[in-house]
Length: 564
Image (cartoon, rainbow, N blue to C red; front, side, top):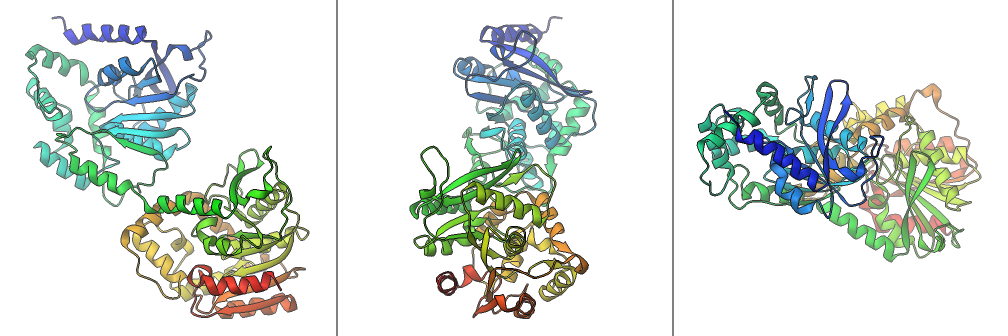
């Protein structure tokens, strides 16, 4: 018997070609192939691919049909204005793999590789249901590829609690029973739950749909099994992209309440604060610059706007140069906000993000303090800085000491807070014992509770802060976790590896009297080892993050040091 859907499929494919689209099989690796409809104009004569000349939109389907069946109307409406890419996810349409990996991350990685192989550099991703979850995963894993998201009838991740609630709404006990129907009646239920008002459709079409659309049943069941995760496994919702949510008001699976909650979770106050801070920086005459140290290594640094010429070159500052180097828990601007506001009128300030913080990155595998110091020194020289005073907090102080040793001609003097010259094993062990931790992993918290511990250890008197701010701080400030863990691992050295403390520069130590990590005893011992060139200034009722806890006292002391 003739299956109507088999006749409709060639018709759809013909329509796609009429609007300028062509199917391509993209091999991701041996045994893994993604079928994807692409703009015909991007395919060259020798079957290579060139960049699209219109904005790229990628349409990612849900669990009940392949790409073209899902997005037909959108392709017909948008193909004249955008360069559209319509993939089939693995085990749908013409896409397949012989790998046993079924996770959303694997789907997302395969689709990302396919798009890159096709010459796509930036795109807006439109995802429906299961495809929306893949969109969120791609946006997290490849923020350089996904510029923005449009999602419908989906969630960021299908946690056990969301899954239970949605199944209860649908009247099913598991997703396979619903999304992989085995009878015509099951198809009717699937489509009736998915629609607001279910239209009359002849029975033979349901039968055809069942036979055509539900191949690879075993593999798809495994995809569904891998989709549901525990609450503890759920990732943070810190997306850099703009996210638009297009929702049906009568969605029975992920209803408007789910959508509203998801929207609220994506509003991160710290992102808004960051925008405000950047505005403040510009008001006091500072501009962010990306300085390429070498291919693959870039330092983001805020510089005096007056030093940037019309052709984007940098000239020497006309005031004394002060460079603020942040610690391990936040980037430059968050760490030194109060100091920048207080000192920008008197000094030429430079506020960098160290590698793997803020906007700085490298593709090198070198995590040592020496590499950080070399990169920052090169960035400053590239910006026209010849002499400077370095002000470093905690990890930033260690980098400052390294810079002063390696580039004595660049660093005239040092101001360090809550830091050490080098973190030897003996200092590390004593400091961890002081704070009651077995390792430095507390510096990279994974939960709200972990952030509270981090900030309580860092402060003298921990203020009340609403829980959502801890959550937002966690999402914004702790990216590049693997790389940061490697940075800290490289900081701790054996006592035998410690360098001498013979510095030519004048060294000022600004310390909180209740620093729990590097206490006053550590500071006093370091002052003695540094000799007559070092002075210790103590600030009362302050902890490790002394510049944030007592900013006015800190700034007053700092000004006296910088303007003797």
